[in-house]
Image (cartoon, rainbow, N blue to C red; front, side, top):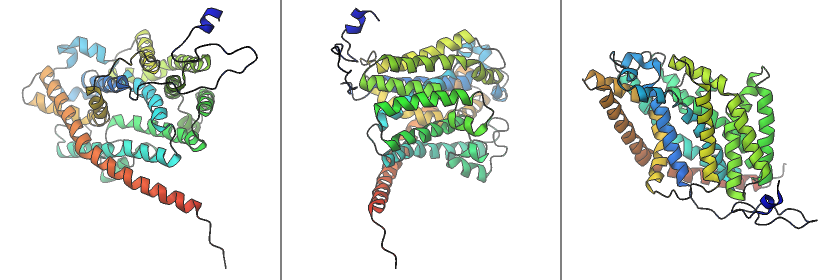
Length: 399
């Protein structure tokens, strides 16, 4: 590295090189904004991208279109939406960043409580609402959506463990929640040891190697734990958070860059799934550019390039993203089908569906997620306090 670059002041790292014969200073937290509004905007953008894929590109819903499809009416939207599934990739990068940010300095019990409070209230509402729509409006729901949707299936979905239980998800988008949960379980190991800069870096390196090996070994358990397809996205997000909190350095850039390369390498495998869902090929080049953009967006937020984004409404948008994602697919398809059967055109049907699911997402957030999350948080905090107290109490002598 040229000496001029090595000594150049940086807002994210040391402002001068260490004197010869001394060690580099330990990473110190940087002074940054308390909230990254840009991440809320990215969440909403990712959710709407996935929504556009399911509503205007996915061929599995041809039966609801009444003979007129988005490909015929809005071809430009249809072609762009074919890559809307890339919103999931952006979600995973953001998740790696946010899980570190929200859990830094917390004890294992606090980490567990925060994840339960964040995930379950809106999810329970989504499962109950989606199941009700499918079972009560079978003539409008997607063909075969209600087949096999038994009470056992719904109850199993309420645990969020339907995939390992061998049950079908009430809504197809729930597959990502099992991915997120496995990430949380892995990260809980680091939290249990005490979150530090060094431990998170070590975790990123170890997980990268194990995930690469898992991709080459025919072992279902190792594949389930290591998640070779999704791990580069989570790992990159964690390294970006370390840049955000402690400043950038070559090691963190290396983790992000290596994860980006692995994400590009895995494109053919993940693209094949969506090619089948679309019924037509997808460009590797376009997919690679969008994957790079997902990394670049979160990296820009981590390095402060998006600190100027301070629109308060993005906080509300970020809050609506999760319930919107949970209800948009099966319920959205049902609303589109109903609208078309009542004489609306494709554009109007999509608009009615969008307004309805956004409104429903807000209602879930306001009247289910917020009040139930508060009660859950209070109850879990009390439980964790009792658990710690019981653990600290010496056992009574025998006899």
